[in-house]
Length: 192
Image (tube, rainbow, N blue to C red; front, side, top):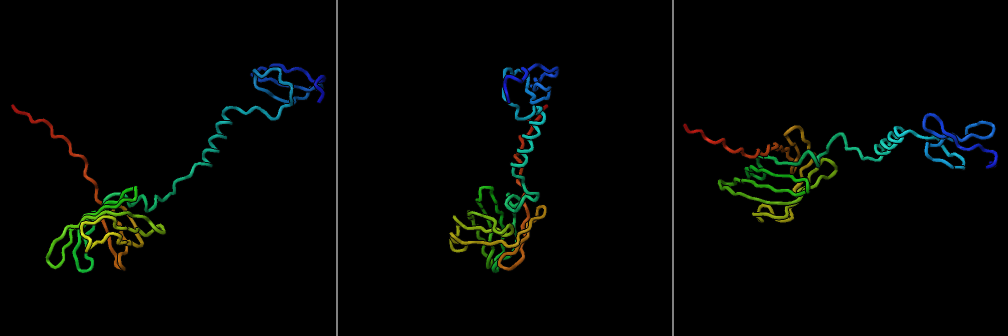
């Protein structure tokens, strides 16, 4: 392109500048305010709205979507109550699954007419999206629940406030415990 044969940039009423060749063909549209540009136009002006749409599209494509089903890792969080029999002992327990992977449990065990209260802590994880593995890390009863013991809840399904699973080949279930709300202050008494 010969620089001597092109016409200078001139204003266009809509706030854009157009560069035309000597035979009056448009060779570029430039935003108003860019004056003295003497090179070829590489593309057309994109409105701010079009840029916003492009940016939103890129953001949506790059943003990881949460699964439609929250998954066992989320559903199991909170406190669960168990009542049942295992190895001849009657057990009542309340266990808590924390988001950090920590696990804590307090249980009352009744065996041969004696009562025992056992507290233990551990870690939990989900395997194969349906099994919950609990490993004991601290215990008040090393004989009954030794440190390092692994407990495996298999085929866990949570529907509403009920968790059903298999433990040692036996079907079991636990019920979600609603954590109590903070107590309200008692209103001041009125004396007349």
